[in-house]
Every structure is written in structure tokens, then in C-alpha cells.
Length: 455
Image (cartoon, rainbow, N blue to C red; front, side):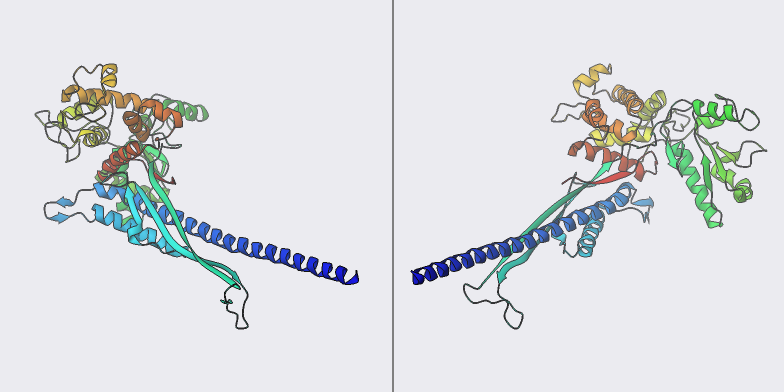
């Protein structure tokens, strides 16, 4: 009996040791695969950061794709980029992003989407492997490799990430002026709104001031009548604060500039850039006086024959320039915006038809054409006028150039549903292309892109 009890205890002990060994082995296997999952997470983070790095470079360089290759015949434009340079810079950024996170990114693993020209999406794929295993260490610290005492495996790791340039909705800065004497698009300098042509002129003046060691600060720009009313209520002295409805700031041509140390430079140099000091007792208040012929607000200068002279971009066929300018003037929409839109819609083909059924130079769907009173979408004059009318309505409705363009392409409902440019590849590429054309032409109405990780 004693012998049988001893044998039974021995068997139980062996079973317990076996269970412990199994549990330990399972724990080691789980630990090994945990390490593999950790490596997988590291690769995914590296792919995400590499894609974002590439997209950020694309965002910064995108407008340069649309700048003219030559400043004048025989004089290259150093700011112009072709598609190959644009993509090469994004690949280099993705490689740097991966390297900083310990994961190599090969050029062939960076691909682009959105359009064949001016890509707006970038995908980064990273590949690697990690060694997992369990085993007894030998005296030298290496893993035991005798059969049955060690297990080793190489597990492949794959991670993908896609980032996109998404046209911003305008955020806290409205893209369209309302409530004053001007209702066109707005550009911003140092957070202050003004007409786009005024912003361009200020940029030139500020650059000249910097060359002379003077910094120009913008303290006020466009003000609506309601804003002016609040100012006047706080300081009801018409010598210093104009009553609502009488301030020149309502026209988006006026800038209050500083600091006081810049007043002397402004007095001597501002007229060279089209700015005049409005009141002798306000050395900070300058107004832009070249605005009637401004292309960026849609009021193009005209020659003696009524033809538009410099209201639209150079890629606009001469036969359509007067039609675009006339429609821009009628509906208070930027002529350059309309021109860039027509270029993206049809390439100025008045007989264009899309697979979806859009027709004419402005690519109206039959239902939209009927709603706009457009009887013949293949009539360029009528179609461009309807395009300007619709864009005026969409700009007023959404208060943002990108959102208005998105609504023109995908429909107002899609934009209202998210309060953004919908994540529809065709729509995001369409909006980005037009904003790129505007930015390349030097129009600050083209708003900044946002970079977002989409998968």
C-alpha cells in the first residue's frame, strides 16, 4: 500500500510539472506573439507618420504646380514645380518620416492618388519582419537550437497608411464678405480680412518694407456695418470713428497699419504700391486705390473694345475672357475663380458631356440647369452666367470658397451633411485642383489645405 501511494504521488507530481510546463510554454508563446504585435503597432505608427509627412510637404508645394513655368519668354519661374518634382519631394518626406521612426520606407512603396496631375492623396506601405520564439538559453547567452528545446519563426509585418490634402472649410475666417459695402471673397493677412487684390498689394509693400528693415503690422481690415456700429457706440467721435455705413473699411480696401515706427516709411513709400493715407490725422489708415480693375474680385479692367485685359489667368481662351468678366461683374464673384472652375470642369469645351450626364462648358446637370433657368447648357455665354449665379448663391450659403466648390460638384446636400468638403475622391480632387489654380495665380482667396489621415 505504501508503495502504491508513493507511486501515485510521483505520478501526480509529474502531472503537475507537466501542467506547469504547458502553462509556461503557453505564456512564452503569448509573450512572443505579444512582441510581434508590438512590432506591428510600431510599423503602423511609422507608416502613419510617413504618410502625414509626405502630405504636409504636398500641401506646402501644391500651389507651385500651377504657377507658370516662365515669368516671361526665356525666363524660367523658379517657383514652378512639375509633377515629378512634386512627387519626388513627397517621397523624400515619407522616407525621412519612416527613418525617424526606425522603419525604412522605399520609394516604390509610396504611391499617389486623387488625379494624374496634382495628386492629393499619398499612400505609404511599409514591409518588414520580426523574429519570435521561445527556448532555453545556453551558457553563452544564445538560444538553444536543439530539436524540441527551442522554437523560432520570422513573422512578416505589413502596414499601410493613406493621408489626404483636404480643402479647409474656412474655419473661423469667412471666405466671403457680408454686411458692408463689399460682398466678394476675402483674403487674410495677420488674421485681418481684406479684398484679395488688397492683400497682394500689401504683400508687395510689406516685402519692400522688410528689405528696409521695417515690419508692417495689420491691425484692422474689412469691417461690416454691424462691427462699425459697435465701435462707434464705444467711441462716438466721428473724427476718429466713422458712423456705421460711412466707414471706408466697409469696402475691404482699407488697412490700419502699424507700428508707429513704420509711419514715416509708409508716408514715403505706400503710394508706390497703390495705398494712400486717407486722413492727415490718422497716420495708420491707408486705403488701396487701384481696386476698380482688380482681377481678384471679379472686376477686370477693360480695353477700349470692351475686352478683358488682365482679369483672368493666361490659360483662359480669349473668346471666353469677356464672358467670364461680365458674369463676374454681374454676380460679384471672382473672375479668376470662375475661370479656374471652367478649366477644371470642361477645359473650356462648350460641347463637353460627362459620363454622369453633365453638359456644356460649366458642366450643368439637366436638373440644375433647369433650376437656374439655363435653357441651353451648350451656349457658353448663358452657361457661364448661370455658373456665376450659382456660385454667388453657394458662396452666400456656405460662406467659403472650398465649400461652395464642393457643393457645385457634389451637391449642397452633401456639404450640409458634414459641414465640410465631403470625403469623395472626385470632389476633394476637384476642389483641390481649383484652389491650386487660384493659388498658382497668386489669388489668396485659395484657402489652405488640411492634412488628414484617412486610413
